[in-house]
Image 1 (cartoon, rainbow, N blue to C red):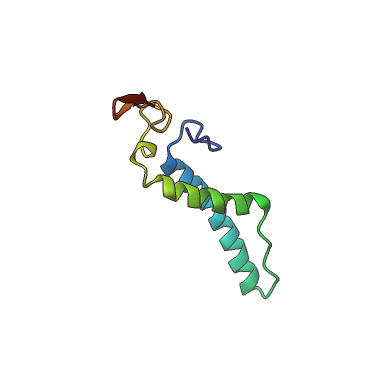
Image 2: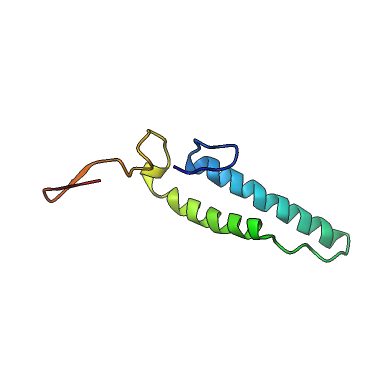
Length: 88
């Protein structure tokens, strides 16, 4: 389960929205500084982490079991039979 501030039970879609908002606030501040002829701000560690998480979460969107919350821990609790060998 993805735990994002304000979305403790959120899906990967909530995580994408949350991280995108963090990056957009940085992009807006950078654009404003450049428009004013000022030195743009340097991204904070949290903003850099948001970009890393966003890339990871976009990859998760391609994993169908990560896109819904049916109480299975992102598919980790799904049981499958792999050539007669039960696995989760």
